[in-house]
Length: 462
Image (cartoon, rainbow, N blue to C red; front, side, top):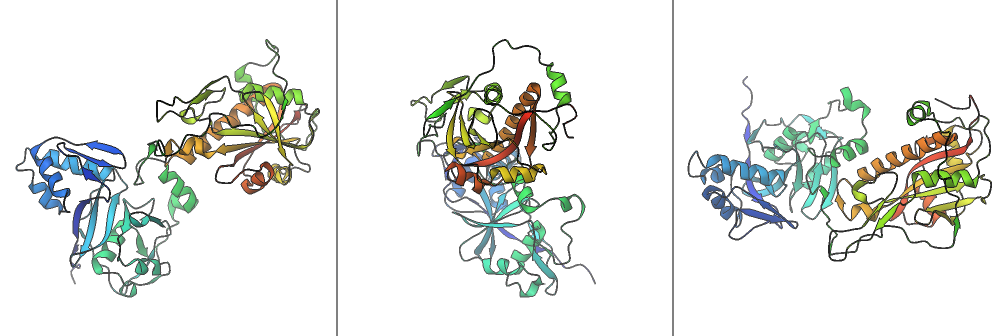
C-alpha cells in the first residue's frame, strides 16, 4: 500500500491581537515597539490586508505584483514572524483552532502534515509547558519550532487529555490539528524515548530556563524592554536601611605581602571546613567585604529620562549596572560580632542586624558535608525589581550570572587573604526570607558560600 497523502493545512497569517499597522508607513506597532519594514508597494498592499483581516500566505505573496517585489514581501513577513507580531492560524472548516508563534528566527509554517492513524498511541511531549497568557493557552517546548496558542473555543481539553497515552482517534482533536501538533513535536508517539541521547541529562526546568532566557527558541519580548517604565518607579540603586548599623573595619591602604593574582587564581581551593583553621575576626570580614562588595560611586536616576534606573560602581560587575545583589552574612562565630544574620550596607560599609541565623547555618553545614557549621554563611539575595524593571525573559538568568561573578570575586579575595571559602550548591530561600524578614517575590536568596578563618597548611579541599 502507498503512503497516506499529507493533510493540507488551512493556515491564515494574521497580526497578533494588539498589533496595528502604522498609518502612512510600512511599519507595525506592537507592545510599544514600532517595527519598520521595506517600504514597497507590495509590502504596503500586504499590510493593508493584514490591517483588516487574515490572509493565506499565497494571497500575501501574490500582492507583490511581480518577481522583483516578491523578496521584499517575503522579508517583511519573515520579520513580522521573527518579531512575534505575525502569527499563523490553523483553521478547520473555516473556524480558527490554534495559532503558531515562531520560536525560531527562520520559522516557516508547514503547508501540509502527514496524517495520524486513528489507532496510533500518542501522548503530549514531556518537554511541553502549558500556561495561560492574554492571547490564550500557550504550549511551549524547547524542541518545537513554534509556540502553540489555543484560541477561544479550541479543543484544549483534548490536548490536556493527552497527558496520558491514548489512541489518536480517541484524543478528540480534528485531524489537521493532530497532524500539525505531531509534526511540530508537541504530540509524540507514546513509545518514544524522550530521554535518549543528550536529552537524558536534562530536566524540564533546566531546559525551559535555557531556552527562554536565550535567543532562538522562545517567542516573546526579550532583553532590555523597560516594560515597567512609566508604570512604576525603578527600585532604588541602594536598598534603604531598616535599622542601626555596625561600622566595619576597612582594608589597610597600601597593604603589601599578598601573592600575585595568578598565584591566587591557581592556588584557590574550596575549603574543607572540618580541617583546622584559625578564628575569623570582624576585621577580616570587613576587609573581605570592602575588597569585593563595597560601593565606589552612586549615580541616582535622572527623573527626566523615563528609562534611567540609576547605577552604582562596585568591584564586581552587574548586568546593566543594576547591582541587584545584596550580601548577607549569617554569623555563627566571628570575633567582634554577635551571632545573627546581618545585611551588608555597601554604601556605608556597615552591617545591619536583621535577625537570627535560623536554619541557614545547618543547611550550610549539610551542603559542606562538614561536622560543624561554618563560622559565617555568606548569602547573596536578589532585589528582583532592580533587574525585572528593565529586562524581560533574561532577568533571572542575568541574576544568576551576577551571583556567579560575585561569588568568584569574593572567593578570590578570600583566597588572597588566606581565608577558608567554599561556594555552596543550594540554599533554602524560604528559610532566608524568614530570617531576613523579606518577601520571596521581592528579595530572596539566590546563592550561598561558607566562610571561615585562615586555613592552616594542608587544610584546603579539592
